[in-house]
Image (cartoon, rainbow, N blue to C red; front, side, top):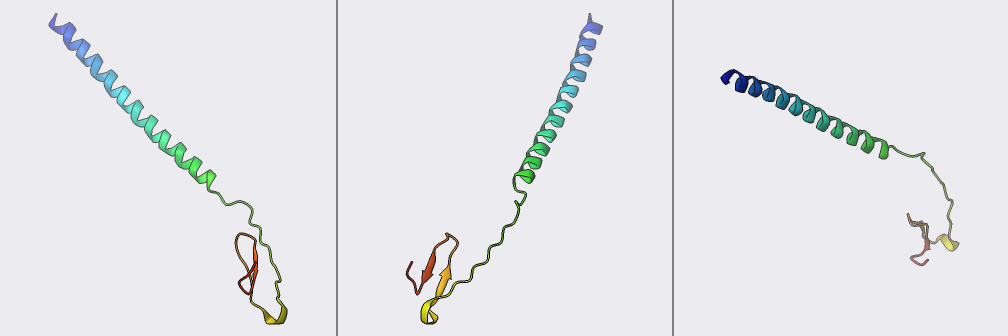
Length: 76
């Protein structure tokens, strides 16, 4: 009877160790896949460079801002 309990405990210990190792592997794979997705999501797109030649009348101050608006002497 005592031998059966020892055998059951030994099997239970082996199963718990296997499940713990599988859980650690699953967590590592989860983090690795998240890092891969973050890397893929943040890859730079094709860079588009646009050049503009802006000029104002009578040497006015012309500014092209990031929102696409052109300001001449502080006015849109």
